[in-house]
Length: 364
Image (cartoon, rainbow, N blue to C red; front, side, top):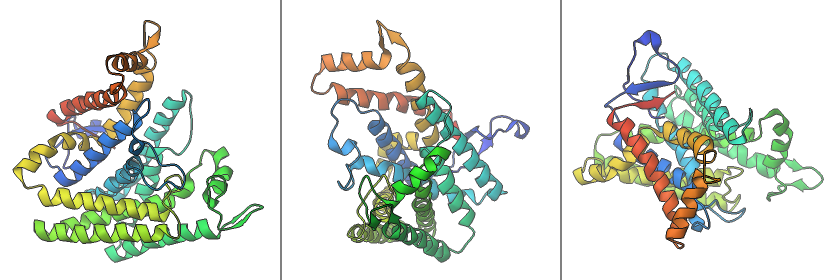
């Protein structure tokens, strides 16, 4: 998902849309943030039993839990890679091609989970569409893009608050009746449920790209950290204020939730950037970089393996997944469920580490 100065393993004539590449040019801060996001994603997606409330998505009106910032941070990191991608030739075509392949991979993941061919808007599909919009707008001056991102969020805010709800009225926003749900009901038969969310997520990706440009604007670590700290605090505060008008809400991607998530990501990136040249931090950050350098692979492969192997193959009449959970719960009734999630993350970290050591990076 990040960009790199890539050298194909095979000759250029054999280059495919989905490529294994070798590279030594990485961004520690961005890969570290992305790696943290991937690790959180694996934990959240593989919790069993009764996990800590922060590892589950907040209920409607319940604010923002740790689990709720994973997807926004994924989008933020995807946007952060756009300025680096534009340095490559034919970047418009590459942006379109990347979006197409991400969309198709997303359909593969959704179809795998559903056990039948499905055309819908899932995680990767949303990343593809939002990322494409942000990439096509990248040539504009930064202040134009900042204005467009803000305009998209304000327009989406107005859409939610001013769209009439059938037989109810204007400005209704609850779990069963709201403008986004009303439009998704219309779009669902077309496999486009979730399409309105492209508006705020495109703004989120654009903010990620703008933050990356801010990082690259100075090589002075102290100045860069102060820039990011100031921007992160401003975005977080803006999210809190916007929350007073339209609450934090992940299912509908409310502007307050988007801006607040961007603020937290920027603050995390500020911390990573300020420390990235410290030897002790580089060593501490290495496990995250292993995940971050292969974020796309770390997202797709665990889902496919879980569906086709862990939940399908059986031993003694139960699936491998059930057997592992039962064994760990029997060994430790208190910590068995948590240990399962931890071991699952470590398993995929080891797989990502092998790819990292070989300098294989899966990208589209």
